Length: 96
View (cartoon, rainbow, N blue to C red):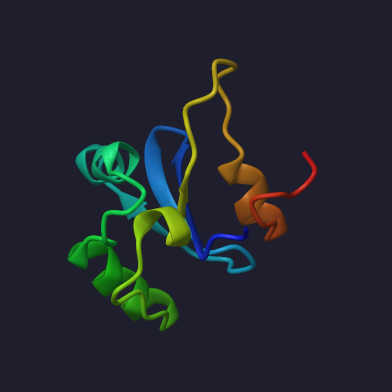
């Protein structure tokens, strides 16, 4: 399943990305944690739905986090896949 969005650590912050797009949304640590800790069946938070609609015109009304947002876990190696996804426009299943 391809998710519409990816939430990931990136350098010293957090990003919300849309595969194939060249822009991303910066997230505060608390917002990232909210997404990471949420149950997959929880609805997409209103703040996220509003930001995504404004950035990409994507309507997430009534969608669940688990079907809409892939939340990347921190890497034990100190780097993240978000840099590939931003630079190459990869989806969540891109070869790294």
